[in-house]
Amino acid sequence: MQTEPIYHITTIAEWEAAKLKGYYEAASLALEGFIHCSTEQQVAGVLERYYAGQTNLVKLTINAEKLNHTLRFELAGSVDEYFPHIFGPINLNAIAAVDYLM
Image: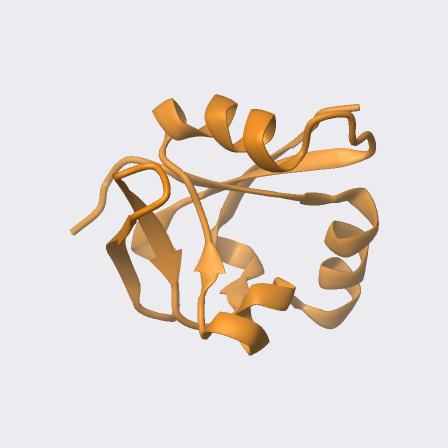
């Protein structure tokens, strides 16, 4: 079982919408079947590769033990690393912290 937190980057607007809905879903859930996440060591690379120059971002710290859906580490061939993927919406009680990354 994953005991270390995992992380997900999203926009402030998407986070605000999640609070209203009562759960968080990334667009990748509908497109790929899972929500992309990172370990603490992977966050900087994800920000650099996919969010360079963007503002109004938040980093969600996720307590994996509280997730209602399956968490699996899967190989991302483009960077040859295993990343955590959540196979369903993220229940809000699994969000341990929200850091605003302006």
